[in-house]
Each structure stands twice: as C-alpha cells, then as structure tokens.
Length: 315
View 1 (cartoon, rainbow, N blue to C red):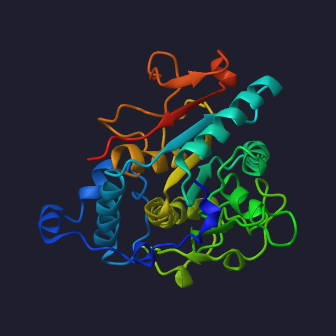
View 2 (tube, rainbow, N blue to C red):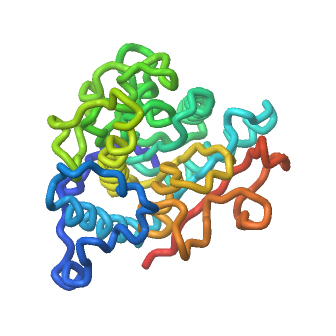
View 3 (tube, one colour):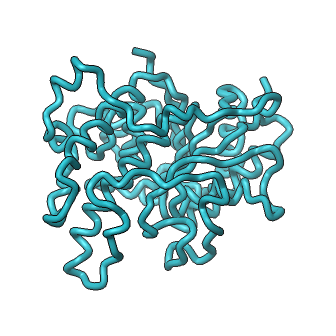
C-alpha cells in the first residue's frame, strides 16, 4: 500500500450541505440538536439567521452518518509532557497506525496549546518521514491555531513541507483562533489559509460579513455562541472527508465542552458534543472512568501520557 502512488481526491459532494432523507427530516425538529449542545448557543444574539436551528440540525444528521463509518482513530495524550522514552513509544505506535490504515485522507485534530502542537508536529514529521511509514496523500485540517496548524506546517510549500503531501479542509470564515491569526497561543502564524487549498466553511448562525470580533467582555459570550456554529460546521464537514484521524489531547479532566473530544465523538457516537449523555466516554482518562483500551505510558493523572486505537464497528 502506498497512498502516494495515485493522487488522492476530495469528494466534492462532502463540501455541500447534505439534506437528510425525507424519513429522517420528518423526525428531526428544529430543536433536536439543542438537547446535546451543552448550552453552547444559549447566549447567541437576537439578530441571527432565522433558520439557524434547521441548519444545525442538518449538521446533526451528517454527524450521525459519519458515526456509522469505521474510521480508524489514534488518540494520543500528553505528547507535550512525555519523556524521551515515551516519545519513542508514541512514535512507534504512530508509524504502525499509519502503516495499517494507509488512508489517503488523514485528519489531524487536537488542542490549541502551542506546546502540544509543537510536539505533535515533531512526532508526525518523524513518522511521515520514516521509511516504515505509509504516507497519506492529504492532511485534513480545520486551519485553527494549535494542533490544527500542524498539517499546514507539514505541507508548507516554502521548503519545510514533506514532499508529496498536501493539505485541505474547511476553516472558520471569521478570523478568530485560526492558524493565520497571530495571538498568545499562536506566536508563529501561517500564511493565508486558501494558499493551502483550504476553503471557508459555513456560518450557520450569522453571515460572517456581519460579525465582528468582541471589543468588551460583555460581547464575548454572544460572539462565542456564533463561533460555536462555525466550529461545529467546520469539524463536521472535515470529519466527512477523513479516512483516518490522529488526535492530540491533554488529560486535563475537563468537564465542560471540549472541542477536540466533541470532534472525536462524531466518529464514536455520531454527535459533535462533549460531555455527551449516554456515551461510553471513549476519550476520558480519569481513574475510575478510563476505559481499558486506553494504554497508559505514565501513571500520574496530572501528567498522563498514553494512547488509544479506536475503530467503530460498521453499522
């Protein structure tokens, strides 16, 4: 298997807003998705798209379709705190994973932390440059800062990119927490996202042309509600493109909404949400709730290092 032996093609139909079949559409009310949205949209401003709930419900349906597919996933915790020995173990697992799945379209997701992103890039670069690795043709990314930016750095055409691999995906049209926007968590922004073959994704709640960055604390809650729609749309569409996924997490025991785990839950539970009632909690590392298929490389919860290989049985 050599993914670079033939060009990989992105299914153009995946980037279109798919409609639910008539039977499914009849079952979905405009508020269906809200039951598992963890209050992310409660503070939205009054002047939103009157059909935003219907658009979010369509995303909910598309997530369910992704959740039926047996997409191979490698989740890695604590890349930023791993010892040299643990890094080598994670590298071996990553190389073996890439060799086994040999997917043309590899999605990369994870934390916004610059430290996590730095180690994720080092691991992925070593794995993709390894003679034992099967290289994907495309890296799927949402173009955010943090781990999302790793795919762009690995495919940078200015000289540091890995030959033969390109990037694609959809990003949030509003320039907030993006890989091309400088900030505290993004000290070295990348160039224009469209130069990497990325496209702006939907903005279900409000036209991005009518959105502006918050100037005061009181504006931040309503702004985040609008962004939650963009983030969910971006991650859902990119999940549809993915043939496999590598995610980099931290074991911070977050009990509120976690965007990385919400994306992972699209594949495991068919829903972009975290925490998710009724879920097995595939991605939780705390003692007492951690599932046995999460392999620990360290024992301290504060600096948990480990990994999980996951493929959902096909429905």
